[in-house]
Amino acid sequence: MSRKWTFHPHDESAITRLSAQLKVTPLVAQVLIARGYTTPETARHFLEPKLSNLHDPTLLPGVNEAAAKLVEAMKSKRRVTIYGDYDVDGVTSTALLWHCLKLTGANVDYYIPCRMEEGYGLNEAALRQLHEEDPSRLVVTVDCGIASVNEAALAKEIGLELIISDHHHIGEELPDASVLVHPRLPGTEYPFGELCGVGVAFKIAWAVCQLLGDGKRASPRMREFLKSAVGLTAIGTVADVVPLVDENRIIVRYGLQSLRENPSPGLQALLKISELSDKPTLSAEDIAFGIAPRINAAGRLGQARLAVEMLTTDNAERAIALAAYVDELNKNRKTVERRITKQAKEMVEANPEWVNHKTLVLAHHDWHPGVIGIVASRVAETFEKPTVMIALKEDGTGAGSARAYAGFDMYAGLESGKDSLLGFGGHQAAAGLQIEATKVDEFRTSLANWAGTNFMPSEEATALRIDAEVHLSEVTRRAVTELQHLGPFGAANPKPRFVSNRVDLAEPPKTMGEGDRHLAIKVRQNTTSLRAVAFGRGEWAEEIAATEGPLSISYAPQINSFRGFERVELQLHDWKGRSESLDKA
Image 1: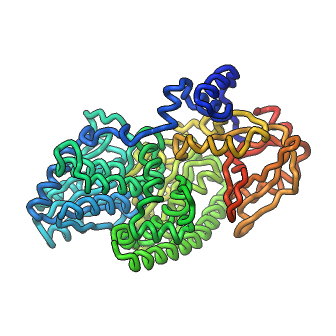
Image 2: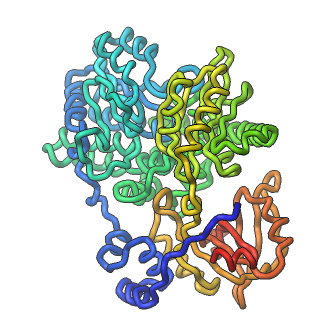
Image 3: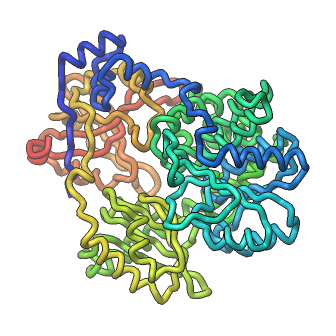
């Protein structure tokens, strides 16, 4: 299906005026205007965010009570156990709060459930075990627990004090814990509701540091800790794909600097094995494609505790060994992922009756529960449908990962089919579930029926938002370098995307990478020639080669650094032949 391209109206006088006022290229001014920053004041505020613009942690619902209980536990030498999740957000949350409490002298440890054996979030067996080992301990969750109503009730029943800090979707009933910390807690109004789990943990740590200082300011030692902790917070924020606006953008911007300037032994080892050590500056993409997948692989393959150890150890040799191990796990994860992706696509193609379903529900006994979430995203993009992937287990149940497409509310979809499920939780865009194997067909039909009446994707929902139509000659190194100041880029703040019309192929298209998965082309417009790459779009090579006449291309420009040489390169997002270009451009 050809995607629609939507353009922001071009206002030449506004672009010229803002360009002169800010002393930036017209291209940057045009992108700022397209994204709503139309005055010098709003544009400067966006271009120059400050750490001081972060909201005071005491505004976060529940944080004052949580910090007070943690400080009280520290002073009385009561054991504090951080109960985290096994994804990047949960691992960085656990490591950050552990570092903070350890610096205060607290008696602190952590518990990360095994993805394959225990599943997501709090579980009753773990809570009973923690209580048996030390009935007086205080348990604080990070990045999980807001949906754990039954588990919180058990903790209260057995006398295990529980603080829940989370950012996930809040259900109809809140868990009865000692304290709830959540940016969107009902009846409260925190200024920014889109923090991820580690963002919430950072605010808790900040509040603890304030309490141990003069009540408003942390001690110099703890201020230094908070500055370094922004690096861990940035990793979880990028990996959890929360909107990179407001506080999240500030956290990532300064966190990237912190990772470069003051990494822990574990992060230093991780940067080196990800081949990022020598980069003068880091980007959100470096986290998304270099650091996060390696941490995530540990959790996906049942070794999340080792990832936390890597991020908390002060032993350089141990850190190097653990970084090498998670790197190997990531290579294994890629192999498993490719196999499952192939099986999933074959399954869809073998069941033509699913073509009328607006959703896909796929299940297989040979799928790894830790990898299906990544594959679900790929399948959703390939078939342009919200997708649920279920790894069936020997005990007759299945663990599923769900990914939305084109604005579909995945949480609401799962809720509509909850009678077929053992449990579920997550976000509008991504969720997890448990199901009996015998109920998969019933759930597939139920979800498809609900989507049939509640999911009406429009062209606008899948449209590519274009910041500007430009000539290739405008995509200069200076302009692209200036555009980088609009970052860090990610959800809700994507890389600037442009369209150039009437461009010609300078060379035949080529495929590259393992299995010819990626595309490389060279395009020319008048006297300007540039290389463009499209990742995961190797199939475009034949289509483009067979197209007669000039093309229209949609892309994000970037600076490609290789062996000390820098050049402008285009990340190709979409393309159209001459007839399509006239229809859509």
